[in-house]
Image (cartoon, rainbow, N blue to C red; front, side, top):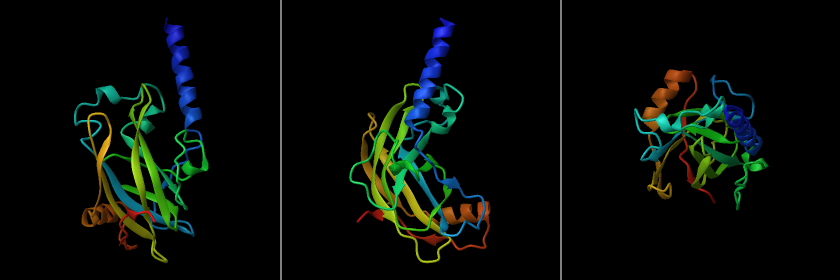
Length: 200
């Protein structure tokens, strides 16, 4: 029985890695000097009510090594052109520049300094069953010329008990994000506010 369980777990892990093999996530910004043609993007994603309640994460602990990077996180297809239909297999070029973030935490990502469309997002309801829930997006940001760092806002998704999204809000928390930005990366670069807008 133990051997069969280990074999099933191995097959499950291989299937997960194959399914997400094309997903390439944006690099975390570790310095205020991004490469030429790049900029730092700052923001946050929230799920209301949260997927994991404080002090109650027993059902969402990683089932195997490597699964932790999927727990309590959202992944967004970020492209230079809008996408009419999202590839839900996550194997296409739509996922070559994925914006990933932990729910409720401010992220600092390095990406191309260009207009970027967030087409759709996905999160794993739990990593044991690999159940997924999809997030509507259809929003974009356009960095000003020569910007080094931009704040794009907090996107709050309100859901029902069946993981259906009932409301989407873009909230301006620039003051709080700026304080976190300066604490983490310093004050030598100005964080410009460029809130996400409906894609057009």
